[in-house]
Image 1 (cartoon, rainbow, N blue to C red):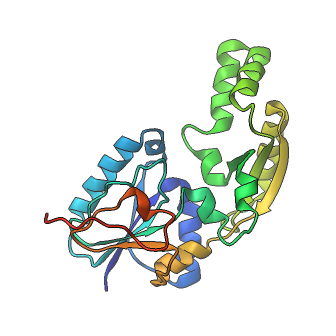
Image 2: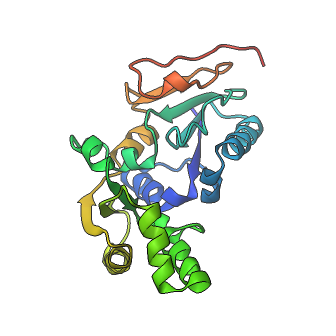
Length: 226
């Protein structure tokens, strides 16, 4: 079977690590991380990639639901294989029993998120440049008032030392408690190796990804004729 990977560039380090782990050599289409800011735009751009990806049996998505940005995607050219996760946080913390409790009051970082165009560090500095340090701190204190922790996820896909320092400095500015949690690329390894168990939604060609495809024991797909 021939596969084509469609991945958010924010997870590039982790995808490359997974390809190294598994020996996978499938081609990858890197999607701009800024698309997360607009789920409708994300959906439209992903559908364009699907429609143009001919000659493959499976399209492997390194995405979660991502604000329902993947809901409504149609399998026009091949099967769609999608992790049943809300977002990439769940993907990188795969297998942790404490993920639900962690998510309640934690803002997450990785190398990819820190280097993204609309990352938290840049947005804070932009606010400082525009309003001054004191007002910027106040703005972000209000924006992040329900967060207690700033967590750097160590996915083992990059040298974390440089990003620890950046994250610690950011946590001080934002008055959040800094911590590090060990993540993994296990779900990506399973995706690339074809281990599509209950953690994945497999949408047959002619089907459509629906809201209930994420977080249910079986995939709910709508079969259409394209």
